[in-house]
Image 1 (spheres, rainbow, N blue to C red):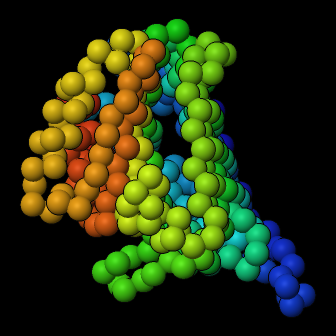
Image 2 (image 1 turned 90 degrees about the vertical axis):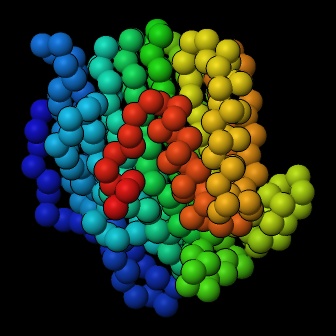
Length: 291
């Protein structure tokens, strides 16, 4: 199904001073199906500020999400969804880092809903989320896997841009992950940073002073048997001079492997993510990651 995008990209809301404020709204969906021995586009829908682009690629099929509003402010709402039909292999990524701007009180909301059919190989690889001072974001990731489907994902968060001298002293960031296989919950994760992120992440048991962090997830049958390969890859990444400020760890159990990364240097975090994922997946990341 190919649906045209409506021209309306925002809806009004009332600010604290009674003025009407414009709020971005966006809905985008992409679906893949296996046909004639290859993964093909099956569904595409986009409206408001949420768009989908399908770049030409010579490897696996790719879809690139973008938010034409240029970022997320308080009251904005984005709803993304993707489906991988049985036997498909595709990557969904983002055109650039998403920016979460200062809010006047309301939370910006992002909902990501993914369905992965039996035998499919799905990669969810958005670029970083940059949180600015005063930001307020609530985000959800809901994933439903069928049979032996494989799901690989990354989410990275950067607190301000250190190269620009930015400091985040107040923010509200909530990230909620739920992943199910055949209806059974196999992974749940919640991140909650409310208040002063620097103070929250200063403790040795929370962030050890990190200003950027990421989670890499692989949900697939028997992946716990590859934990040593994941650790070896991370050690290789940490050998680079720039990675000196980076801390990392790997856990694996019952078909789930989780990599946690913490860094004071957002660039070092990004470079580690790229190197690890390319080694782990055995193929290059989408071109937008290298722009």
